[in-house]
Amino acid sequence: MTTPTDNALGEKRIRKKFRGKFVVITGASSGIGRQVAIDFATGGASKVIIIARTEPKLIELQRMIEQTTFHGSRETKGPDVIPYVCDVSRRQEVIAMGRDLLQKLGRIDILVNNAGFGALRYVGAQEIDEIEAIMHTNYFGMVYCTKVFLNSMLSRRTGHIVNIASVAASFGIAGMAAYCASKYAMLGFSESLHHELQGTGVGITVVSPIGVKTNFFNNKFFPRRIPNYTGLMLSPKTVSRSVISASCSPRLEIVVPFYIRAAIWLKCTLPYLINPLVGTLSRKQMNV
Image (cartoon, rainbow, N blue to C red; front, side):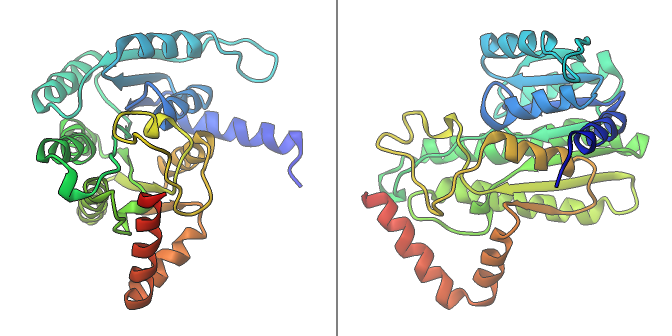
């Protein structure tokens, strides 16, 4: 049983681990990214750079973090929160953002590639522009951000990249082909880079959650409903805890919740049984 003392000790260890760290989080204006920014701030990070396309939401988050009460009833000043407007799907914007931050701050210790979106639509009814937009944000946005900060990390022989993927990186789902493709690509890129980074002092970890209760589904790309393939939707806080752990983990991938790893294993081991089940389930979600 966890006691208040245990929680306090755990919080103290976390704050010590991230003390003085500079953290960049993309897609920080809402959902998982927003919660990750809050948790790194309360976890002792020195600078938290929050990146998104919508400036008012970033400013709101900045003010909220800076006014937050830390450590129970004791009010302390939070980290330096830096809002930065950038569309990660645009390579030149990311290059300019990376150069600007490195010039001003000197380094980035942790990069969280979280920005992304999806669409619930059969490929036959989907415009190519929409498929490209999903890939440019979810996959190439991650690649652009990784590239602008990676060499700086390598030169210092320290740093960690956390890529927020999805269990959809391991399962093809009817109606989500573009999204699944972007997350498959993210996982493959991260696995290759993980091998390349061995012995460099720089790490990379993928966090792959199932469905999360965020604004991900509240847009024109999900016009009818929120699909739920597993019967379980996670809170952003649950996923954020895994992101915090991932930022100092030697593991390649953290699946959330952990027992979904068994389903991935079954899919890889018995695809002739599991793939038809996934197909049937996901088609039913499209027809609800």
